[in-house]
Length: 348
Image 1 (cartoon, one colour):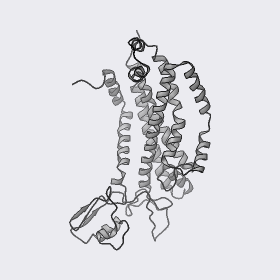
Image 2 (cartoon, one colour):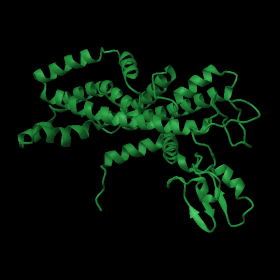
Image 3 (spheres, one colour):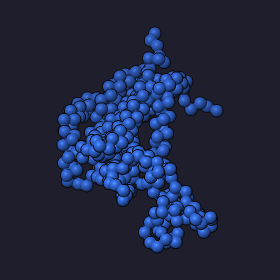
Image 4 (cartoon, one colour):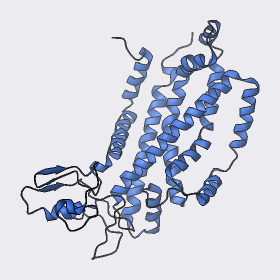
């Protein structure tokens, strides 16, 4: 069976694995992403499994089940924590709740005090609640899913535009290159924050709006790198040989130049993810981000700053943000060192 990757690529992957800090950070980050994508299984107000009168129900990813389905006297969605207490005396009926039985939007108002509530194992608020009585751990998890989704979608779109345009600028050159250089210089001077403030004031802020704004301004950085690398690669012997054999521009770019400049994309991608997560967090903190009550790290950070008498809020979000940013930074450093072409080439 033919090997899918070249020997040099295998060497790079082995070198990445030898950099323990980056390698373990990669698996830690992947584990956090998987946990965030499956957050409904362990941080939700819906039960994982309900057995009632011999029949099994799966409320987590299934349809909304009203209270009268389980013999309760209301017709809105079931409160599964109350249902668990109600079925405790029935031997053939039970409720399996997630480890964190709170949704990121659910408010916990108690008779013994006002939120924010301190961390409590008895109430299953392991990191406490925010100023609105919502579980902090649930909001951290769902906020991480939002931030990671934003970072990767914006990364993919902006890199697709930047890589394509940068390769074309470097390969075609001439007036085409000069025209887009001037355009990028002008467009890069547009104040990013002012654009967001104007759009947020005119429209309802949502996830795709911020992805679109980030893509509009985020493609320029990778464009300069790819333009420079394409200028260097297009005069190499393998490109000249492809031209001599009649290969067109797109075939040369896709099959010859891009594989030899992929190291730049792979190296910059983790740092772009860090920048995108930081950007969304900063916008939410400043009040120009996602509309409440969307789970957001920036919104939690703002609450923590405004409620220093509840230190569990700011400590939770600061530790979460620091862990993710440091982890992704370690991954980026390891990739940059592992894919450094100086380790796998020599000059003669």
